Length: 67
Image 1: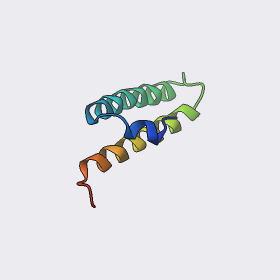
Image 2 (image 1 turned 90 degrees about the horizontal axis):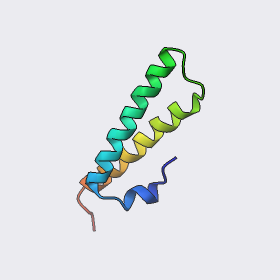
Image 3 (image 1 turned 60 degrees about the horizontal axis):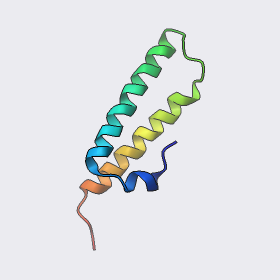
């Protein structure tokens, strides 16, 4: 699981890179599940939530600061 504090400290470019990595992993996990090769199904849920965390932080960074 990725910590949100850790994500907020990263640059936008690194977050986009990390999002790509997570989406590739999600694809591979779904493929393994479809072919019956996936052993630990908990990782599918974990990756899905990590993707959501990264997307949330990206949206926060894109939003203009209110102050």
